[in-house]
Image (cartoon, rainbow, N blue to C red; front, side):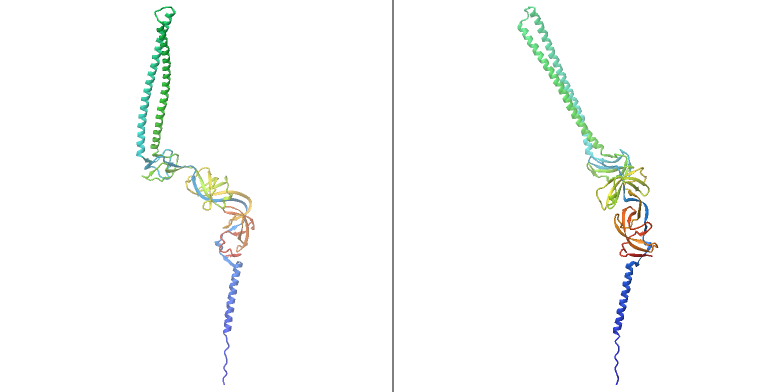
Length: 418
């Protein structure tokens, strides 16, 4: 009789082996991750920027970019309506005071000028005729005064002669005739005085009317002068020695009074318009020294104005340039400016790490003596400059830190450099 042997079940042992293998692999992964989190993260040293902690004088400054702008800018406008007939200069041309920029045409205005000239000539002729007539009337009145004076004198002679005869007792002259002559003397005297008054009034009238005529003529002359100025304004001229910055006009273009025809900028007088980040503007004050770099020359300047408003994250600062203006200076030339804020004579400082802010605490990676391992360390910063930042606590002179971007591996407390 055969005995049937049962085969041993090895299925459980294979399953167990697989589980053990999986556990071992998981442990290895966890160990690797644990080591990486403890500082095994590798970073290429060539890709890093290293800054050495130094002790000495630190110049606190703020950097900004901007452009050169002319100090004296003038828009040349027109006070008449016209059409652009000719353009003599273009943008970029240098002009002197009185140089012709462009010419406008306005036939109606020219016609009004000619008609006003004719009206003035007519008014002058009428004024002269009126004065002649008034002077003639004045002469007539003077003649009337003379006639009345002579009548008075003749009557007075007759009266005096009759009176003398009567006083002598001569009866050839009646008392009635003598009385009538006496009345005539009084009448002629009153007429004489009245004509004198009329003469004075006519003299006043002549003066008043002459002034009125002269006022009318003067008014017409002013009207003629205004038309002449408007016609002269059709020829647009430069108002100062300058460079033509903008010439927006085109031939045939119709312009109205008040239209800006050209923009002029005075030669050789510029100031810098710098844009300073809003986070750094708090340290900028009027009167601070500035070095303006045109990328060819460096010019010293002084802060003269700080714009009260923030535009696109920056504030405009105007800098008055001191000294001779370089040859390459042009309107809207791009420049860099460094504003000197303060000088700290003895302090610790380092190249400013990326994203580091002044008067704050931040985490940096401090390199060991061999420069192969970097550990996280909290540092307290002070004032910032365009390139350096002050260290108030956490680092010592001679130590090195990573100043480049650490955002890719900032979750690791220790990194290794290779």
